[in-house]
Image (tube, rainbow over all chains, first blue to last red; front, side, top):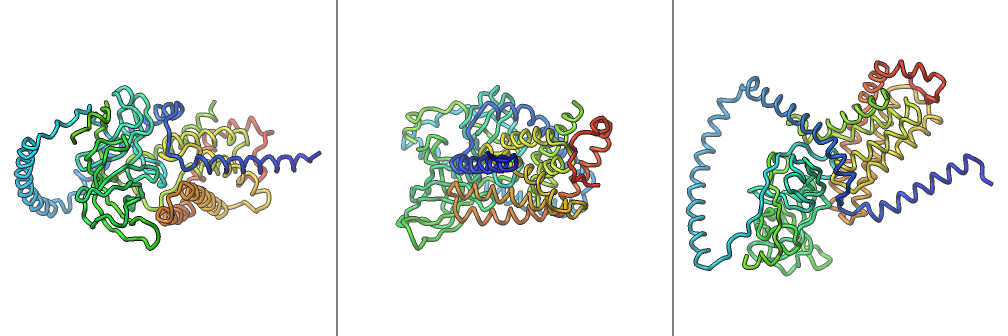
Length: 278
Length: 179
């Protein structure tokens, strides 16, 4: 009925339409854990780890042995910064002591204990479209998909894929990452969605809410993905959109994602009832 | 076996270079997907069966290592391979300029595909603005340097695979073989 060329062309068109339809429905979904992913990560992550170690060692050798031209100038600058840091530390220690006293007075419940696993970053996403990292801890260390990943500065992301010795972490700034959050000062709620290098956007913040640049954004814990009260970032800019009910809020994360080297993975997530009183 | 190891080693090397944290090159603004160069190399210089095996394989590897939805790289590489096997029948494909243009075009199409996937996910105009910048810089980087990666693969092919190819002199190496 059809010639061979026509049949081939028809088959290619049908395949193309099929791919387009499938990707339209599934292309916007965040990554889900699957067995093939853990196999590939187990096979490739050690190579990436070795390459990262080699390049870091070479860069260290360059900086510490060959690139000392401005070391004296940098030393003077760093000493000034250290002195300023010492003064700030003293003030923070005083604030911490006061915080502890007030908490005892108000009878706050003890922090729910998490099992925190320290992990080193050994690789990153091979594309610029998505933001993820590979860490050197996996299921052998008790890590599961969905475990939150944090640093002292704030939240980093969530574990997306787990192999035996390595894990793939979807970063806060990835467009597929979302976290329920609130403004610490006014408790206005919204959803923080990643925006790659531009930082994050806080969606669904009502126009009537009081939000100002500099406000700290924290997690609510209501989406059951992060513990409540973890720092996300600060509001960098906002504008009331002419249409709709919501403001456009830009959030700058506190974590410097291009510089992170070690992270904490919070395993052994407690039930939401354990978060009462926080 | 030798062919399998050659392509697998080349592909994994390109993946590791993109994924490892290198203090000097992390965040390089004109970086692009180096595996596009391997896809083009397979399309222009190797038999159909090798490209038909390794393009989907490397697409699956990239999808598993990337934080994006599964299937994006696999789809992009497959269609790139199909298109680049077909186009040289109608275009004069005899020099480095064609390689540079092909590399730039494929990276542009791949990034345009990812940008449209991001828009379908409902990310909106804010994401699109950042995506256009990535698309432009990646295309420029691929046009300027992609042809060199393909020629390096070509040179390595001559060193490691020429005895194998001599045994297969009757096989369907593409009639548009670039000399």
